[in-house]
Each structure stands twice: as C-alpha cells, then as structure tokens.
Image (cartoon, rainbow, N blue to C red):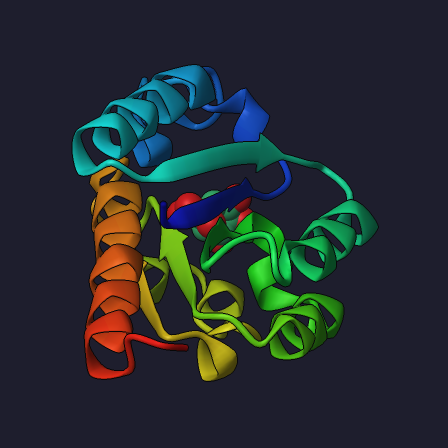
Length: 153
Ligand code: DQA
C-alpha cells in the first residue's frame, strides 16, 4: 500500500479561528478528515501530523525515510525561513509536495520566497483546503507513474 505523510507546520492548529478572511473557516480536523476520506477512497495509507516546532518537523521528515513513499507538507511560516526543513527534505530523498492554503505570491513580499520549493516535486498554492487534496493526488500520481516505469524498485 502506498504511504503518504502529511505535515502541517506552525499555527495551522489554529485554522478555523485564525485570520478567517485568508485561511477560511475549516479547522485542521476538518482538513485531516477530508484527507482521511480521500485516502480511504484511493486505497492509500495516510498519516497527518502538526507541529509548531521546526526541529520536530525536521525529525519527522528524517524519520519518514523508508517509512513513507511521499511527503505532502504545508510548512506554514517555516516556508519562508527554514533552511533546516529544506535540508531535511533533501536528506529524506523522497518526493515532497509543498502546499499552501493561500496564494503566497499574492501576499506580502516576505511570503513570496519559499526555501522548500527548489527541492520539492512541486508546489500548490492558493486553493484553500483543496491545495491539500491536489497535493496528495499529485504525490500519488507521481509514485504510481514511477512504479509503472520501474516495477521492481
Ligand atoms: C501558509 C502561508 C504562510 O505564509 C503562512 O505563514 C501560513 C500558512 C498557507 O497555507 O497559506 O502559516 O503556509
């Protein structure tokens, strides 16, 4: 069974009460529930975790090596600051999709740079919670096409 790890960065535990005009009214539980339904339908093993701590996210990315086939991450504010998360993604050597609820390119200048984007498979930004659905689907499609081209690896 294909295994996907979804990581939510800092302050995403506050979704639903945090800047509703930007992030909407869905809570993190709502988003995780939506992802669980997607995973069930797709026949994928999906785990979702949230942390407000950079080091914890780094550790989870490191530990994902060999345990998961892909990571989908909303690094939240660490997107714009964290070389440590970028290095962790490089060391994990697994397809990683970066997602954002808001369109970071329409926002403040400091949000328009991502340290992750250069090492990610791709980035999805601006579709609200649908960004996560697009992210997990993109990760799954990528894994499946790799399996088809080299079934033994
Ligand atoms: C975010 C965008 C980031 O700039 C911000 O710090 C977040 C959420 C998003 O999902 O739109 O916390 O990653």
